[in-house]
Amino acid sequence: MSCSIAVPNSPAFSSPSSLFCNSAMNSVISPPPSPSPSSSRFRLLKPPIALPTLPSPSAPSSSCSSPTNSLLKRKRPTRLDIPVASFAFGAPATPSTAVVRDFLEAEGDGFSLYCKRGRREFMEDRYSATVNLQGKKKQAFFGIFDGHGGAKAAEFAALNLEKNVLKEVIMRSDKEYDGDIEEAVKHGYLTTDSEFLKEDVQGGSCCVTALIRDGNLIVSNVGDCRAVVSRGGKAEALTSDHRPSREDERDRIEALGGYVDLCHGVWRIQGSLAVSRGIGDKHLKQWVTAEPETKILKIEAEHDLLILASDGLWDKVSNQEAVDIVRSFCVESDKPQPLLLACKKLVDLSASRGSFDDISVMVIKLDQYI
Image (cartoon, rainbow, N blue to C red; front, side):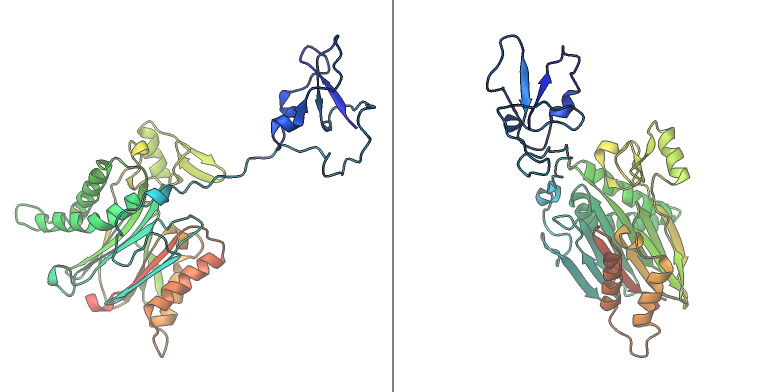
């Protein structure tokens, strides 16, 4: 069975979209074998459903279910996954980080970390962990960095944020300054962002950091990485996710001339980024600030552990559930198990619930810093 389609000046003409299909165009449209001098027509190998068919002696009748003659429907082209991160990696952010890895683990004095790559070709998460900071046993710095648009920003922040924050903290501890630790952390974040933008590379990173100093826990974040502390088994979020869905974040963005809209169920800035704060994101810097929110907590005996994690965990596992799982390994068990096993348990749980994102979890025991 074949059909004829009139050219646009015919009343039978339909939208050109009916001529498109998933096969190569040269094999779909061809001139008729015996063109008439009084007409101009194209013959389609199989007729669109919406058009009537005309018998043709030159083509045998066939069933519409035939694989060779069935009409090919328009389909969305296969998604191309361009490995942006494949040329966004430089030196590893931490000694044990490799360019291509399905997972990453690390253990140190009172902390453990486990990261698992999601569906991206390369892991974009990074971390930072320094104990005995400045030679002081009760001083430390920890961080989780969740990159997007490549790993460059996360890698840069993992290498430089601790240094910049600590420099500001030390400087402001002098008598000529008021010792405002929150202001010091803010300037450390902004300096890191400014330095990264000078690199003139694409991408950005969410961050959550914990500075432990003088018996205080100073937690800061930009983006949707989160810090949760266990207070005698009760989960308490120390950070608030920076997403365009937050009313105050949306108001801030709109006041700066930007807009926030809902794209496929996710609120995004300028129809693009799903977080409203971060390091980098040069193309959206007018609205995506690197200024962190900071909370300072005096470490007490009831504060047994701290969890820092990327949104790959928190999108699938609640704060309280995470605390319960970690405590079952290292606090409530008669035979405490390594913190690393608790980190793995959380990562595997999130992955089993459908998380396709990179998942990074760090657990820190706080009792040694009291």
